Every structure is written in structure tokens, then in C-alpha cells.
Length: 401
Image (cartoon, rainbow, N blue to C red; front, side, top):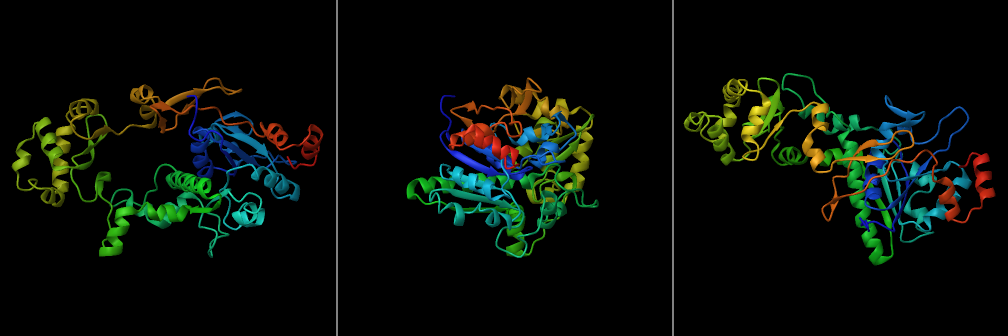
């Protein structure tokens, strides 16, 4: 790929762990120069993004596979933003950058000078994106917060799981990933406007707002009708059936007769056409009322053959998928065929297997490079803003870099 969409853009990011790094990785893979600002090592401390120390799988000390998940294609600059000299260097970098990103606690960006009020005086066109737990302008600004808390407070857990079981969280930190994505959307929109107007701004997104927004239609149903969506058995759709998990002879599969035509196709293909005229199942409304009975009848059919049989029979004709475990999901040959698996070079593991960006440009997957070693680009970045080798050495000696 000769030219990526964000080639020529520089994004600084004081980021850590998952949400912020996930969002900026999209920018880096689309060609932006993303300079990841990490705290330098101090006596008795390893330094860097806390994600570097998340186990259980490491490439070297303080260099984890978890970190690699969210930091492909970036550069690493170690810089102590708690120090006046560190903030001076940041401000120098900001003069030639298009954006400044952070995912710090809501009260910290202003204190560290990462907002537009500070950086806009040096570079009127810079966009400052802030990703926090609860926002920067309310009584929770100083609160720490994590994905699981947002799933709990926004109602995700109450919607997930079997009706007679305890609330269940989503298996991954999905609110982190959604918030990082929304941050990238807001940042790109503001960068486009800054190109036209010459004026940047602050962009804010927070975990709880994103989680609440993702409650989507159940939230709108409640706000307008007072309708509280209950949990449905078998992870079923709240208002359409059959659209849920079913047992097979060797596991589970998800079958979605989401449209009336798929109900007809399903019953035709599995040899149960009599269900089409059964008054209990003849209409979508009747099927919903009699969902438990219908589940039992379909289970009795599906349990006679393995999942692979039913998926082969129904695939391409109606929506169906096996319920894979992690190994089966990642070993899916279709993901290999579509280029979702990539290999990158890393000094401690070559090749390192990573997931490709889901975004394509002109039909091609975006290129990937391994996440940087801690401070790997410090000398080059600092030299680029005019610091001499002696000045850089002094900064390292003083613990600023």
C-alpha cells in the first residue's frame, strides 16, 4: 500500500492500558505517526504503559502480548509529564502535531496541560481528545473507573445471562473498545474541521456515556414506554424467535430466523414444514408467546446431528453460526482467507501473530508492525525537535526521558 489515509499526520498520546491505545491503534494502522508517551522507568519501577506488565504471556520482562494487542504501528517516547521539563518537551512536540490524545483520569489533563486551553495557545489547529471514565466536567471527574464497572452501571450485566441466573458481564472489555473507537471517530471529525477552519478543539468521550449510549433500543423503549427489556433464555433476541442458541449433538449453534422468510427456509430445510401451519407458531407474535415450546421442539431436531451438519445445511440460506470456543474461533479458516490474521517481526518473537485491522483500503488490509519496545523511539523523536545527543543524555540521566 503506497499511501495510507492518515500518512503525514502526527498524533501524540498519553495513553495506557486498553481504551485509549485501542482507539489510537486504528489511527496508527491507517498511517498516522502515533507517538505513545510513556512514563520512564524510575528506581524500583519498570516504567511504561501498565499494559506492558499484564500477564500471563510475556516476550521479555515488561513486554507482554497484552501490550502488543493494542499498540501495533506506534512509536514509544518515554517522558515524565509530572516534571516541568517533560511538559516543555511535550509542548514543543505539540507545535508540530495534529492531535493530542489521553485516557487519563478526568481531572488530570488540565493539570498536565494536555487540553486545548494549554496546547491551543501553541498550535491553534491541534485537536485534544480526552477519554476518561466519567468525563472531565462533573462530580465524578476524579473517580477512577474501569470497563466492568460501566457494564454494571449502564445495565449491560442485567441484560446478560439466563433469566434465572446472576447478572453476567460481557466476556471482554467491550466498553473500553467501543469508547476507544468513538474517541477515534470524534478525533478524526475534529481534525477534518481543523483542516478547514485552522482551529482545533477539545473532544471528550467517557466510558459511562458510551456504555449508556450502547444500551440503544432497550434504552429508547424504556425512556418512551417504560418497557424494561428482560433477559431471554439461550441469549435470545428480545422480540424475535427463533433467534437464539440451540443444542446440537456435539455443542451449540446460533440460529436466527430474524425475518419471516427465514422461518420458512429453516423449517423447510430441517424437514419440519408442519410447524409453519401450527397455530402456536404460524405468526411471529405466536412464536414469541410460545418460545419455550418451540425451543424444545427444535432442540429435539437439532440434537440428532452435530453442529457442522446444521451449519453446512443452513449456511448461505439463512443466518447461522457455530458457537465456537476461542481456539475454534481463531483457527477459523475463513479468517485466514480474508486476511484477518497477520504476522509481524518482533525482536523477541519472529513471527509474532496479530489480528489485522478490520478496515480495508481499496480492498487491502492495512499493514501492521509490532508494538514498540519501551522508549524505542525516544532519541529519534527528541532529535526531530532539535535536541542534541548531549541534551538527550542529560534528560535520561535526570529521569525525564
